Image 1 (cartoon, rainbow, N blue to C red):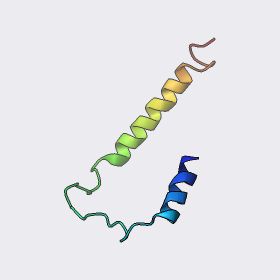
Image 2: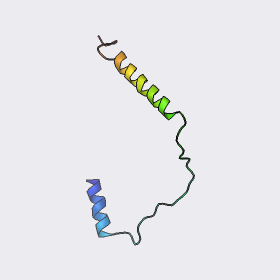
Image 3: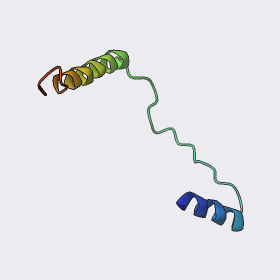
Image 4: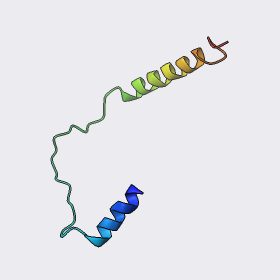
Amino acid sequence: MTAALMLAIGRLWPMAEPYRQPVNNKVELTPWKHRHIYAILLLAAMTAAFMLFSPAGLAK
């Protein structure tokens, strides 16, 4: 409903000039050094928590 309203307003009253995202390089975008290790550790912790609270673990 909201998306349809925004599309209708955009059709009826378009902007005089298209929006341009301002370019400001204030955010560091270099990849995190140990991201793969931490991703594997987080997935292992999530799997362990799932197994702990599943019927195979504590939820008997």
